[in-house]
Image (cartoon, rainbow over all chains, first blue to last red; front, side, top):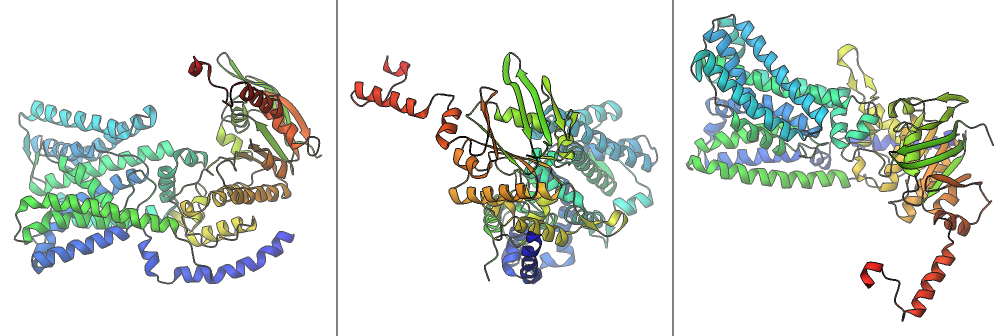
Length: 351
Length: 275
């Protein structure tokens, strides 16, 4: 009974502290995982407006980097979630052409209905994701190695099968109106429709990761897998779900590209591996897991896309863009480390 | 002395040819702190892993509330109210206090598929649970666990176990990595848990910490219970001597002194090194 009465004033004393926490504070913003990504994005905008031209923010200019960001972003979210959970998936590099080729071969070469091609593409993503997930969970081999294996295996399978079935490495696809409208049209002649998919997915991911209870599980897994399992989180199942999500997302992006460009090639997508990892890390996700945010990944992806495309709006030679990306990555990581240690050492001042 | 909540009878555990636990019999009672003492390799860790469902004993029985039970795994043991808190608290350094407190049992608000994590409620409950244990420095549930001191993290883990209805609290060397002041914090929390009627199993090799909170002591030597006694029955020196394997510290010291006297003040050297 004593402890009850003793705790009474504590609750009262706590009330002003919690109300001040909800008030706007600059320091609070800096402690968020996406602080570095936001500043980085701001930095590259200023850089390219200063050295390039304002064209880069006009619709035609914005489309160039939004299109890159949307394609990359859809893959970057599950990659980021896997990284938060302490895993890595590089097999997306061959899942993107696998997705393109699957829909193109089924619906283009064989002329079967597009919906069958789409279902088969997403089904392939699920299957490869399950293989990745089960291998990682069952064998305890690091996921980098497992997915390096499936990266090459899927690439070889796609090349082998497409030459075997179609005799070529590039297949044309003529998608019907509705599929074209949903997955592969240019809105206002410049914006790929995938941008809207990307924005919708951003909203869904924000809800699931930061508001639903499941997001908490992913962070816990990346923080300490054994403790998470002891606390009753189905860590194996969740790992497999995340791998399925990343492989399916990559297949989806590949499919949209095939429908958009009316053709699919065997070799396209390896650049997505590094680009998505850069976006995620610039976005404030900790490489070793347990820390990050969807908004951060969102900003990180845009930052990457702006640097990637912004160079065309300047007088610089295109060849310098990798240098800028490299320097930006290092700066972003250093900045994120600083903000993270700020978050760790933060404690409210005694009032 | 109340009736034991957990009763170990003749527990044996071996890994291949190595007998790690031999014929362990212990009573664990609610509202009491059982201190499990022993040197490294004495079998303390194996014993608590048996208690928390990680290992199954080769022979012997465990009774809980008078009924014999067999744990199918760590989850089973924790569902029955046996909570283990490890040296570093088993918490998540980069998660907020509120979120890490409710891992796996997140409070939600809203309806149907649109349930959202109730951050405010989680933070309030977590902060209150920790403050009730006397850690008044924690007042913001949004702080990251990694920013807390080692003692505060232990306290958070203990408060979490108690909040979720633990009846038996197993603390695996909670004070080993802590400074004097932090260790005192944790000891105070152990006392508070005891006062609330939990059975506490406190593993340590620091006799001072054990003496400060223990009601009942068991010393393990090479997998067997070498001594089982209650508070006040033995002095600190006697307990230290027991932990050192039966040889008294005084004897050991005398040996070293004697050696140094006959060898020009050099400490004994390893046989290989002197050859």
